[in-house]
Length: 135
Image (tube, rainbow, N blue to C red; front, side):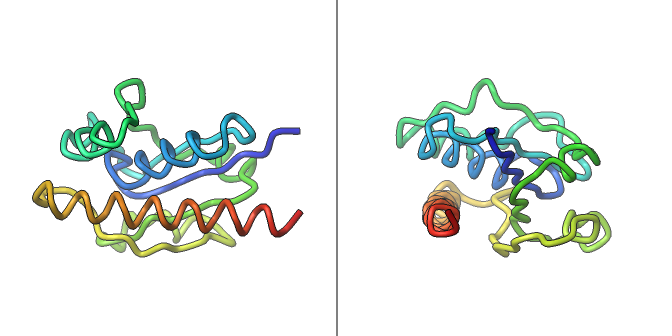
């Protein structure tokens, strides 16, 4: 059975989308990977899309989605990317959430977003190792 992994943040436009793309790439179809937000943006953060493209990952087919109860209940692991907006923070609605506390790329320079991308990549690789160690 394929297990579900869910990455959540408020707008689902940058961090959680990058995490979804990295996790999908590094696990090669072994999981159902999704990302969602409590207040999804109309479209992806263009700088996040650009910095992912720089390392060969295309997020063009991804789009912001609203988090649903079924996404939460079906999730084997749920990761909260970090919250700046406490009222909309997904961690308030999800039990047993892993919190990465990664800064929001919104309004940041491309250099700052590259650092965020690299931090997300490192966290995703650590999570995959953790899941592998649990087997």
